[in-house]
Image (cartoon, rainbow, N blue to C red; front, top):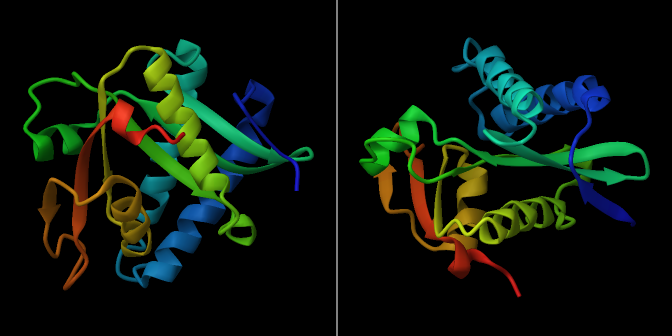
Length: 182
């Protein structure tokens, strides 16, 4: 399987928007929140689309996406960019002083093949190349939290039961050098 990682082009917009819709719907379904949070599903998809538009508008300066392709098909994406208000509040930041690792999504049929890890690695490498000493991120998807804990350790903030009984929201603040894979 030949996977290439690179930057999206403007003509990738529709395919990426569809990737967001497919993967976020799948996440909501697998998390068992698709009915309870059905009203928030379109907002979550639209948030990712707006983030992608900011990437294109700022040429990657505010938001910076990477995409994974197998042949010509986009199978995943991840981004790093300006810290969102929720992460800032949870971590006690007064301003978006550190970047946020955002939105790692891989099409369901391509998950479990290391594609998401490669995309996240590329985001962290970008931060390292830019001399950024640390980054933040959050995760509310229970199925993904175990992967994040394995990779980055325990979160520094946990909002218990944020999405219902036993469904926590977790926040990390990581040193870039520690997060680099060798």
